[in-house]
Amino acid sequence: MYKKFLKNNYKLQQYAHTKIPGLSGLLGKRPELYVPGGKWPTYYSKAKGINIWDLSGKKFLDFTMLGIGSCVLGYGDNDINKIAKKIINEGSMTTLNPIEDLDLAERLIDIHPWAEQAKYARTGGEIMSIAVRIARAATGRDKVLFCGYHGWHDWYLSTNLNKSDKLKDHLLPGLEPIGVPKELTNTVIPFRFNNYDDLKNIVEKNAKNSAAIVIEPARNKIVEKKFLKGLRKAASKNNCVLIFDEITSAWRNDTSGIHKEIGINPDLATFGKTIANGIPMAVLLGKKSIMEFANKTFISSTNWTERLGPACAIEFIKKHKKLNVGKILKYNGKKIRKIWKNAAENANLKIEVSGILPLSQFKILNDDWPIIITYFNQEMLKRKILASDRCYSNTCQDKSSFKKYEIACYEIFNNISKYLTDGTLKKKLDGPVKQMGFKRLT
Ligand SMILES: Cc1ncc(COP(=O)(O)O)c(C=O)c1O
Image (tube, rainbow, N blue to C red; front, side, top):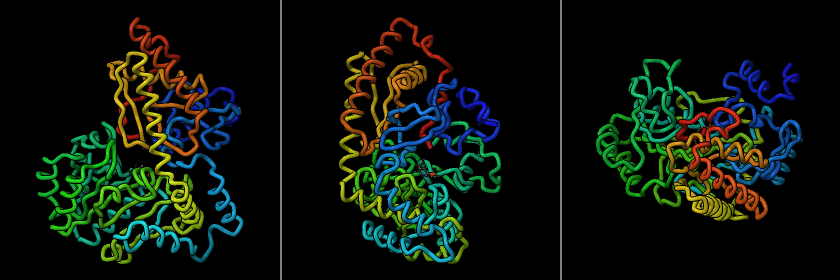
């Protein structure tokens, strides 16, 4: 049935919405977030390196987030593919366990010596739920203090049950906790990133009654060491579990979680996203005294025991270390920022650039920003580049792809400047303004 819409992308998108709620399992893959109106390719036929082909075989350069931050080695990395194919041929799911589970645990503990045990899942939201469950089991307490984005599960979304829309400071405004049990009201308490008033008035006050303090050690920037120290102190003093969510921040600046660079250790840490370069994998590392509670509560799932995930994660970590991928990602992040800044300056546009180097994003400082970014994405698409206000570094961004992106940025920023001045920018859009409002593209 869908085949009859293949020649009309807009109709295909509309049809997809009728068969799959929201079109995609991930908010961040909805076409309406990039270029609404049917122009965004939506589906792909193949992907390699930094290139991606749509269903008609048209090739695009992907200068967005490469799998929403999952593929720092580029799409279809040869070494990861080689291991994946070997594992598929040898059997990826059996009655017995993969030895790669143990191998990966040893490697990750070696990189993060404060940890003693590992536990696996396949998605970020799952592994965060496991971390919170274990913290609650270990402390016998229900409340969780958190900052940042940690997935879609009940424990997290229940933040908004008291009608405060508190998740607007962490993810996006207007999230309705429909379907989340009302009994969870006030079981999680948010605090703001690097906010010392919240540290004193929320974290320090509530830690003694809380199971965990949860934070992403880097969001738009790396957390201040003093702030993290304050969380560590509050957790240790009150026997509360400190959890670092490194699902997005790890494997970017270095071959490790970013907390290693900050120099403060958690009790539990979670990893996911790019840890196996796009092969589903998620890891919880932790201190033995806490991780042991995983055996006292019930945490178990069939697909967490398949072999592709750990085998590809091992290959990823080996390659990451060997190529010094962290250095490449930071270097490429600097290049991306330079392109944005110079192109904006050349066009007389005010720009704000943020994020850690491998997770860079920009904003043109103008009230018409939603129109500007829609136009930017639309015009990039015409030049066969997938683009947005974020460009995550990967190892496949090379001289020629950067050049193409740079030329496009200069041309588009100049047009934006011209059309803002003569007031015609909105008229240049081929469709509606894109959906806005995301703190994070998840
Ligand atoms: C910090 C953080 N935690 C949790 C998640 C949820 O991970 P997943 O989308 O794999 O469920 C994400 C995803 O973006 C994330 O960035």
